[in-house]
Image (cartoon, rainbow, N blue to C red):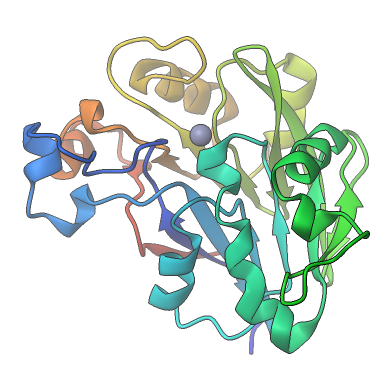
Length: 258
Ligand SMILES: [Zn+2]
């Protein structure tokens, strides 16, 4: 058991994942396991603690793949389905452990209450439905997960507020299009930064590759990993070769230790 933070990429794909259903795009047809991307999520592990950031539609498959036997909580970045749709599959953890802690902006909690009322609402609980313990996250208000402090970082996904999270020397950001200078200061000094890089062409609500590289140039971490990747970014191995030495494309099942 070590205090070192291990970060495992459970999924590195954009909202449809790669391959896209029915697609004949060469990247979707690639045999390289690094070109197969489940919906975006990371597992944070240290000592006996296991937390995930986001819980998308591939959550069950990701938990099976990691042979996860317990989960201490879920941190949400925002309410979009590719980050939240797997919540029902906390059931095996709930049956063993009881209420599963979730950490989210109050707007995200409201959205989850609407879509997963049988999980989040107290009244008329369906027998067998899981329950969560709600922790509301506010910007500029660090909080604890296990014995580690988390600093929320406010970013914008077009006009939607999204939380990134900094834990010690590690910062995880997804679905970013813009970020204010004041929030950038929270990220500076991180050794490892993960950020989204959707594709080559510009997009309304996501960094493309060029914008993600410019962002890394500003923040200057020792190492950076790109995630939330569309098939339109290209083949993993080819894009990886084109990147600066300290910048990498993340891929599913990659683990880094801080
Ligand atoms: Zn997303």
